[in-house]
Every structure is written in structure tokens, then in C-alpha cells.
Length: 306
Image (cartoon, rainbow, N blue to C red; front, side, top):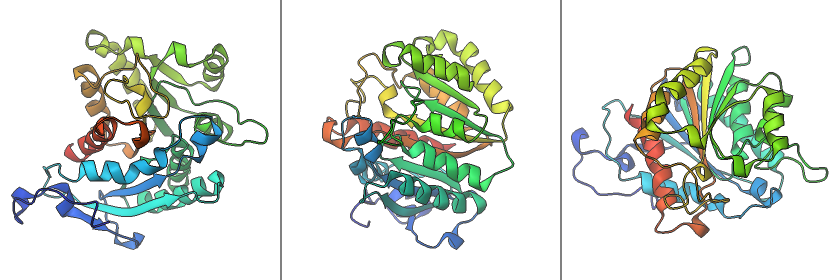
């Protein structure tokens, strides 16, 4: 991936470093140390295809990497390992999700922090499975920035998709999740009802504004305080189409990456329980000037800066 991890070279001293100078491409999970950031690309959109969405997200991981490359390193102890991409070339999404889960669990058992770049939002079930495999006796909390609940029951003959992740998680036991940015015009009453039945808490996109942050923080903290390990997943279609046009299902009335969102987002990133983060549904085929990929790269970089 030497042709991907490139950027402006100002010097070799630590004070000059940018992310591309600190990336180590790896295959051996025994090299992981505590607090290393460990990246997997989930170059898969089979779940988007099954969900009848706009395909193309499988091409996003390398483009997001390229847009991450030039960010400055702000922590002297920053360590970043890239384990390459996971693919689904045979259409067997279930096996691919299991492959991701196994790799993520290795990262977490070594004390690393798991970062996954999608790909479609079918990444959620695989990433969650990896967290649960690593911490089987712990209560896993999930914060999901998304316009959709993704709690559809798989269709007969179709199987899991980008829209079934939280239904799948709920089948494995009690679910502890908070969904932020949910759109009323993107979810049927059935999906709201399913969310209530599963105990999925949510904050509507309309509720995410600066003056309402105290209430939002209270609900976020309530979820975090009730769990042992935190997993954060971001579907890029939660954002307004003007800043994130390149997604599988664009939202004209999505949220903005404004001060309210960034205050909340950084608050979550700072929590010591956060062990895993993924960013899904960047679709380069429909992106404009790589706006969506750049936003995704910036969101990943915020974790590095905490």
C-alpha cells in the first residue's frame, strides 16, 4: 500500500510527522501492543447489494486511507498498524463478517484499538462479533450514528444485508445501543416498533442541535455508564447530502458536522471504554471532489488526536 500512504514530507523528525510516516503495514497480529490503533479495510458491499442500495462502497477503504495520509501526528506515542483489506469476492457475506470478527478479536485481545473502514454498513455485525468474541463476559454498548435503524429482519433467500445488523445483534442476546441521527422519513413504523421491542434507544436527527446538547449528553452518558466496553459505528448517510454526497443512500436533511456534532463526537471518543470504531457507506462512485471520503478520514483522525 506504499502508493496509498503518501503525503507531504516536511522532515523525518517526530515534530514533522504526518500519518503516512507512522503507518506500519502488518500481517502478524503478535506485533500489536496495547493502545496501538489497528486498521482493517472492509472492502465489501455485498450487503448493500442485497439491501438494494447503490453499490460502490467496497472501493472506499483505500480512498479514505489516502485522505487520512497527510494529517499531522499530534501524539508522540501514536502507533498505527494497517492490516490491509478484507474482501468478499464469492458473495458469501456471512463468512466475510466472520473473518472480520476473528481479526478484530485478535486486535482487542492484544489491547489494540480497532478501526475498520467500510464498505457497507454490513460491517456492523462483523465488527460487533469481534468485540463480543474478545470480551464474552462484558456488556457491550453500541453507539450508532445513522439515519436508519438497520434492524430489518433478513429476507428469505437473501440473508443478512447492510440493513439487518442490529436485528442480527439482537438475536445474540440483549442489545445495548443508542442510535443518533435517526430520520423519521427513513424508517417505517415497523422499524420503530422493532427498535422499541429490542430496547434500542434513539435520538432523532431533529434533536441534535447545540442548545439540546445537555439532554443528548445525558442520554449518551447513560448508555456508556451502563456498559463495560463501547463500540462506535458511523454510517455516513447520517450526514446531509451537501457534505456527504457519496453514500449508498443520501439524505437531503441529514445532520451536519457542525459544532454540536463535533462536541458530542469528541465526548464519545474521549471515553476510555471505547475500543472499536468503524465508518461505513462511503461510496466513491457518487462522491463529489471526495467530500465524503475526506469527512470520513477526518472522523477517523479525530480518534487519533484524543
